[in-house]
Length: 143
Image (cartoon, rainbow, N blue to C red; front, top):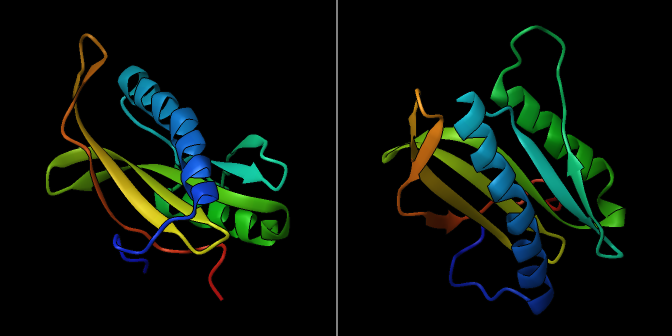
């Protein structure tokens, strides 16, 4: 696990911002519209290109943990051509429901952000709470 006090390289900071700018709006829109979120992610390639990633295990109702495992395994298998990744999921926190973004970088940086929300079922809108962050975990770049 990476400490929040560990320095983050300028490249990791730039990559994390790009990943969050792409992933968070899509996740919040999906939760507002559908009321749920199948985990997904984005990667940053060595040349800086952003790519959305997804996974779908066999079965009618895939478990989020299984989808996250497949996403992480896919990034790990392709890590030689990647700089960074984010894994996005809908989770339950002490503050209620939240969209979680788990970011990791090839240089060893890892941060987790959670964006709490409440959803209006009838209007299909979200009210966002105060986001918080925690130390992250390396999945693809751990050995």
